[in-house]
Image 1 (cartoon, rainbow over the protein chains, first blue to last red):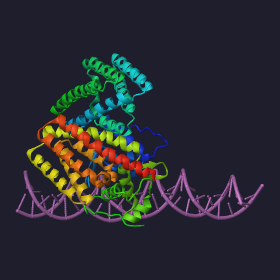
Image 2: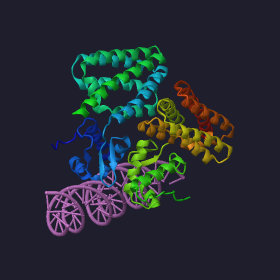
Image 3: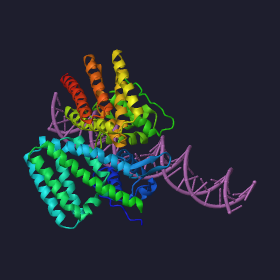
Image 4: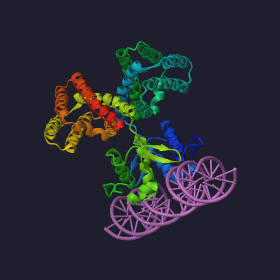
Length: 226
Length: 226
DNA sequence: CTTATGTATTATGTATACAAAATGTTTCGG
DNA sequence: CCGAAACATTTTGTATACATAATACATAAG
């Protein structure tokens, strides 16, 4: 029950950032569940630090929307409602479309090659059964696209929005019947960027998110029912 | 030189939030200039609080991108480069387009009326010469549109992105030759939402940002030159 | 048996103290 | 007069102490 969080001690980072990363990971992987309270002394003892870095980490989690503050009561892990997820996905769709459009304009030869490789890697990953490998391949692919936009702000926002759904990532990754579709969609996106076809790329990106949305919403409804 | 910041003491808010709002305002209005160091004890003395709330406020400003942290050196006000502003505007364009499209679908009768009023208010404001009145009217109008989307996440992101440009807001507000154009653009947006014409609304929103972008970039080039 | 009140505990909000690192300055040697 | 090293100062990073508000529990009254 009192399993320790995995503290990936990057000996150089300030403690607040170590704590921040640790807590964020714990929330995103579901170790810390929605509604669970984050009590400072408790966390401080558990992570072996004082309250100060804990508090500073919580301030950042608060602004990221992963925890909510209740006045004079403290922080707790933010609940994910269907509405809030819908909101996130609506924005993400727009930003993913923007990403592929900008990528069409700005992608370099090297990035294009990396994208091709990521596409192949993903297909290969789906052949195996390890969901976490598939998830990583998926992240890698999308990272290449946003990086190709050359827009750091966009990168930051898309990453943040993606995080909000990490807890439900397994949903469309685990569902093997969808793997074929995912591979096809990725290829479609790859090819349209290769041909610098913004129109087609934006349609493909939109479709890609739409399908993810359907899986995730379906899963949430299932979870809320039980 | 040592003018006090305006601390709008909302006697109930935690000090960290008071400090956060105060510092953010100071940065956005240019009281704290890009590159200026934020020293904790100094700020603490100036605001009459201890270092703790200062630090927590800085953590949030850091995540908002308004200050950057230099390891073992502290925080300083983030520089605005042409690149970073371009990045922000690129994203904002996409989100503003999304906003008007969603508004077309979801705006209520009351919100539509409020939008009409805001449009008229803005036109009236341009007749006067007070830039801050015009700026407020402009903000009010855009707020109504994002609120009409019913998407809280979108609201939060658009507000945050707008903030990044507040320091340059005066640029396109002060330029009286542009007032006519701004009024026309607002009316165009208003009418397309009224007619639930997503296509036209999105074109209008894009144009609106494009024009702002041109003014602001021009101004930045001027400032960097001197 | 239920409800209300008072007390005790707990957790946050804030301040301060201490340590370590970086920067600036002074002094000494060439 | 210039450069390098040592020292002093400043500032962050972290921990701890204290006060206040909120919650929970127990006890007493109806």
